[in-house]
Image 1 (cartoon, rainbow, N blue to C red):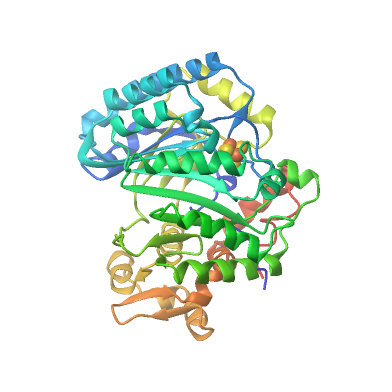
Image 2: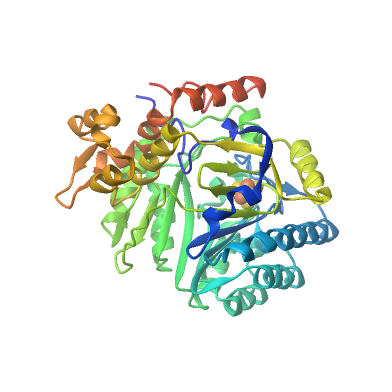
Length: 439
Ligand code: SF4
């Protein structure tokens, strides 16, 4: 079994998106009517590029670049505002991700919050999520986040071993991560999340547990454990680093069992939540979300869109320039329009891979069919012990199933999306990682 095929955090993957013609935001505005939508703001700047990363982020640009970027975000926001006001959109969530959002100066962060609050309407109890990194986590910036009402702050620590951090090419060292973590904790944010990576060359199960033990001293509400995917175009790919599956899986087993034994509930292969935090079920398959900025994705019913997937620095810079020069954000030029079949697949993927899982009756109600008949694979997973029908009517992954989510999830990709992703991979010279998703 190929354990680490792909992380299915969304579906379909951006590599299945293609140029679109004659698609306009106003034609999809009705799905944004009323309450309960998400707003995502992408800040694509980082101090330096991590060795495994191919996310949309650029390094080495000065403050003027960030100023120009915010000007474009403001233009996009004001154009979106017109449409959103006409359908009475109220957002219940704002996520500011990157890149490294706190790479912006305090003044730029103030301007960023001013833009979102000026052009968009939020519910009173909206959640506000911000990503940060240890080197950019300062007292002044945290003050600002606190004033803005941040409800969840997420920091990529990845390891408390300087050796492992240097293999990853992270910007910070362990001491800086400790200081930033301690500083964050003094601000009493409702949820603090930290990310760690396993499968790092030279890492052992013991060194991973050492990092996690240290993290637990800070009592974070959530811990995410990510296997080291060396992404296409990343520096570590050029160096020939690949994830060693058996070692990574042994580390995952040790770490997940350690966290479960220390008061954390496992909600997915990656997400561990402190038991004192209630699990909120949300029907995520249909969530509508608008992306602001370059590289941010929007999900409007069957229309998903974003700027074309960029990996190399030169492609990212070109997209950034295109974004800054965009005069009209109303025309959607790149994305995918999902068929009914893809919408069903998305629904199954988005629910099954995270607990409490997929509610069978709800699926029947939405799509008029039995999900176990529609996806015979699910019956096989029950027989193989990867999934279980719970008494409450949910189909959930078992502990064994959660551990192999990056094998199971990709099996649910449709042949059409698989083909589109494969074409992209061939054109862009990707020879491993997501190629050959099937077992
Ligand atoms: S992993 Fe995060 S911090 Fe590192 S380069 Fe990528 S976006 Fe920036």
